[in-house]
Length: 193
Image 1 (cartoon, rainbow, N blue to C red):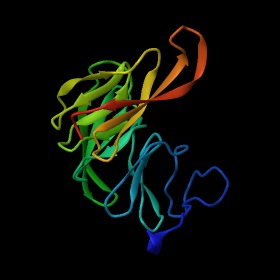
Image 2: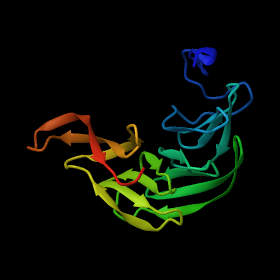
Image 3: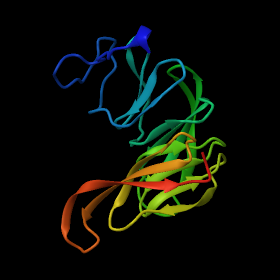
C-alpha cells in the first residue's frame, strides 16, 4: 500500500525490556500475535499484551500461560492457549478485554500452541497429535492428524480461496527414527475456509 509502505519497529532499542515507559511490565519475549481490524495487535508471552496502532504496548490479560492467540472471525472474542486449555476473552474495543473464561479443554492431548479460525468461527488448535478443531461453543469436532514424529506448532488458512491449511510440525527425529532438529510445513486441502 503506497500510502502506508514501510516498517515501524515498536521496540527500537536492542535490549531486553522489562518495563515500558507507560509502566507496563513485559514478562519475556513476544510469541504469537493476532492483528485486529483497527491496526493494533494482541500478542502473548506468559500474559496477553496489546500493541495499539500508535505503538503503545499495554498488558491486557494476566495469568495466562499462553502461546497461541487469535481473534474470532468477527473480532468479538480473543482465544488464548493456556497449557492444555483454551481461554477466551470478550473484546470490548481495541485493547479492552473482559469476561475471561475457560473455552475448552484439549480433548486429544498435548498443550495448545498456534491457533487459527475458519469462516464459521471454528477454532483450530495446534496440539499433539495434530490440529484439534472446536466449534464456537467449545465442543470438540475432531482432529486433523499430522505425520509422526513431531508435534504441530501452528497453522494458517491460505491460498486464493483460503481452503488450504498450512501446518508447521516440529520434530526431534525423522520418520526412520534418526535425530533431527527442524520443522516441516505440510499443505492440507480443506473443505473449510
